[in-house]
Length: 125
Image 1 (tube, rainbow, N blue to C red):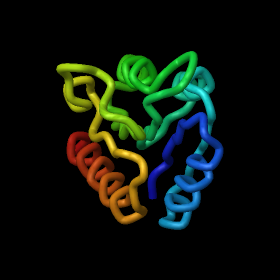
Image 2 (cartoon, rainbow, N blue to C red):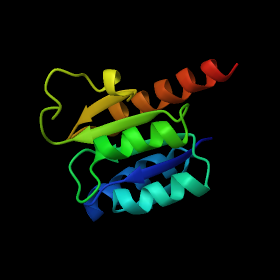
Image 3 (cartoon, rainbow, N blue to C red):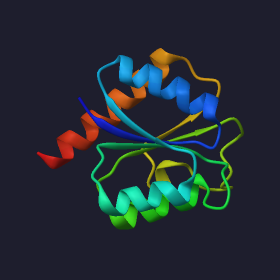
């Protein structure tokens, strides 16, 4: 399965995401800050990035943009409890595969993860 980097400053969300994704056969690496996530993306390969939007000091949008420069084909799913914060732009226009609103259910998460991985795989072929 896939190696997935999960980034969220809420420990509970990290635990839930890891439980769902690990339980589906994926290998997850979790970080609670965008700064730590960027360091990992610079040195390691991932099949998917899942990031919260609202974090300090590096939020999910900045993380997405930096990840796109470091690893352009890395698909990203953003998660947020709020309306998408960039007025006039969709997550896809910023380079994200999708944006899930919290609270999401495990079926929705796994479906979106599957689509993101399939799309990334088809682009590599």
